[in-house]
Length: 391
Image (cartoon, rainbow, N blue to C red):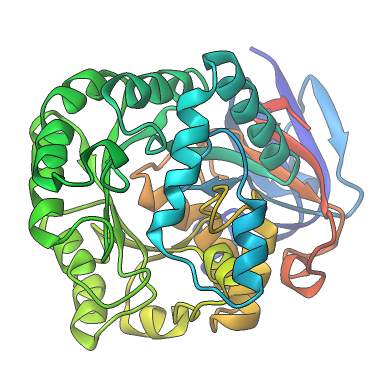
């Protein structure tokens, strides 16, 4: 066993109220002791136990590594032309996904993995230490399975999203595609995935189709999550709560009943908000304040994908949430760390407490508030992943 003490931390965010003040468990003039890949101790620098090695934080802020619980990183190509057109006045629809499907199908395994690794490295440099990612750009049995196999080599949090849109091959037979997604495709994909997801939206899958897909996935041992209520009001949130999904993601268009349902299911179903999508599509912002005031559990994530949210930056999403979604800097940071962990049903990440995984991000700033206060500035100066300096 080897130990390292990170000392002289100006402000430490633990997300553990028992370790410090308030919901963020703030500790000033703090230290963290890392033993192998775990947190062994947190507290004031003056009381830190001896360790084999030391790192001087020089009065800077230390936070848990970001937990990005919603991304789409196994893809090829980009959609610059679509983005340019949208910024010139045309609105986003789910149909744009077909462009990426064609590019992804044409790419080799090596090309898909290289692109995935490039985006993971980019995200890690910005403080992300845990990420979930999905299939959904293959939409054939072989292409969906290979996407998940490639993703599973790089993360534990892999989601089967054969139900992203109806495959172009089944444009005239949506019911046949649902049968494929719940049958042969599910059988091929389930061994590589932990989660099953569906885009429950006009232009994608309706409530009955989504229920069939999620129920089949659950029967195969996968835990449901739902793309819910992004483009319009719909059944996605209610379905997520009914089926005990880990998260309802997007949550842009919510009725009072939807908000109440998420609040009542706060211990089970997290409302994951994805402000990069609204930024990139000039769409209505999710109302985080409404959800938080109702008592819902909220996570923030990037939704990194080549069409509607091509950002891997959790700090950017924090700044958007504070500026445009009614969140305080404390709430946004919690949602981007502990909230993401809740959305992945994890207790070992998103928190800096003894026994937790040693995933940490050092900011070139005295406080985590600078993440929103200085938007667009690369504030993450060091990252540890499982106790190892990664960036």
